[in-house]
Length: 250
Image: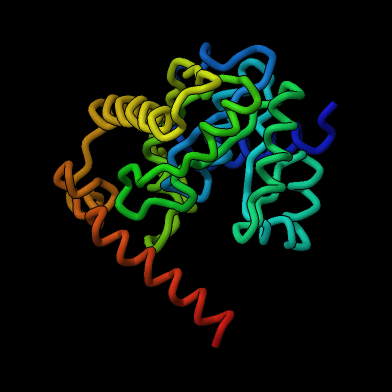
């Protein structure tokens, strides 16, 4: 029974309906009907965890997302996150979160992870952390590569939020499960995961409705858009980290 998670999903679907969001979900047949799996997701939108969860819902699977500790400390979101059995991550000491995630995987849960760790301002895949692959390896479960394209047009960093009825297309793709061998090099396996996710993302971008004018801000510079280049996005990320350090050390 999921007395909290199930109504939260219903509320999210109602919100997307009111927004006019047009979903295109492919590859949901790759989501296992039972058993553990790591769902590795690209990250360009604050709604990504809700979008990714929709891909598992046709099989009535619930995704337990790893999320930063501050969300669990909030007086509203905290109780909801705990009730839905999501996993808090203390970025200064991630050992407990890793162990909790492995335990959930071995108990047959799907655990959602953002291998980039932070949102991509360039809308390109950033460098991946190896944690997603490592926990799949330890738990003996597959990794599900998942990419989302279009969600950043509703809510992302630095750009205006779209709250209205915009009929914005959001593409969600689930790739074939990736097995990580017990003795496989984690760095090499992480590279395989990123390659699979890049291929999915390329396919989505190739068939996404073309954008022009001001909407080119949602398109990566590599594809002729006006989004920050990966180098520019990295500089902004570094500036954010410096501000955070100064806040706690100043």
